[in-house]
Image 1 (cartoon, rainbow, N blue to C red):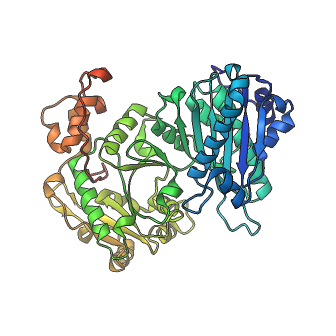
Image 2: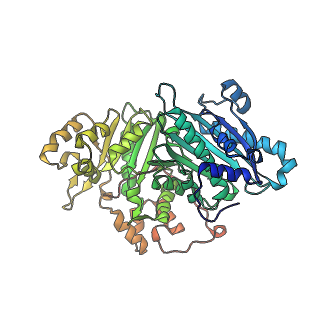
Image 3: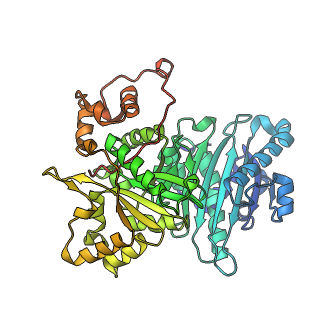
Length: 495
């Protein structure tokens, strides 16, 4: 059944191949955009060999009677999808396992979707998932995705949903040994102008070696989305759900490694953000952002180096965003679609210089003013961490040097409380240069530990991160790590 190489097939060919595979048998439950996935299998022919049941419970009363209530009152959510998968899969096992379980790989496909409404005023998105066996009577696996449907026509959206559902089922059965190929195959017969995949998660006994953080990276790397999110435990998160009605404090950097200067910047920047009377401390999400540009090693991305960084950020209890937004105004445009509450950007002086460099906006008709209209919207504020100049003097907002024609613009932003110095900082940390610390770590040079938090130093040594020369013991011999974490701060490695 599994393939060792990628073979492009169209949607109908994939559906027919699955229908003719006598070992695959399951059910389809689809809510919100018609039974578009099941319809592809019916149209391909031979559907009786694959389909045990299809259903749609559009009425909320019927849906609740089958799958239970949603406490949030929202039905296009991951929790609803998981209830659907669990309910339908358990029914299959209960009713068919004794009859044909010894030679059948059961599956349950489900989606809960909101398609474009008549007035075309809503955000079209959905949760799509498959619970499936790879061998008879084995424990099942789950592959879950969240999609945004971008076609400006409800019929086209339904068609795109049907295609991605077939691709998911086919990929799970024929590419499960190659998760990145499985992910890439989800876009067969589709384009990123029609569908965005902003979350994917692999779970189950056959995916124990799959690192879902890498899957998040692949989503952005392959252009399936511009930003992906995962929590401190490495669990992939859906950005819109995670950031819904939240205040966001975000800091961008390489974090290679996470140093004391990053800790100082993040802690003091967030503390100042929380002082804003518009910010509810109970509704704040702190994001540490890694851009693809900051992850590249030449033309490629070093996956081990990426995981080293996010291992540390996760250990410190931080939520990580991987994005393809080089310019800050694009990042803000994205975040502003997810929340209407206040957004704070925490950055160093070098990145403030980047923001005011007009060459980054040469492709915009309105130039820097067009970008700033988005970047400095009503709910956005910059918190700027100082830097040391080569002569030892301090560089901050009040000593910020700009071309003459931009000075009044900068003064306007300062006067209107759009840019603010981070007032509290440890001057002793300002001389720390991440590149120098990284070189010391790789060479095991004495004294590098004094430039990073103690937890970070211990983790680098224990796990040989960032090229630190040491021996990694087998898991059963590894010392137990401390469970202590601390809320830390990050700063950009441009210091």
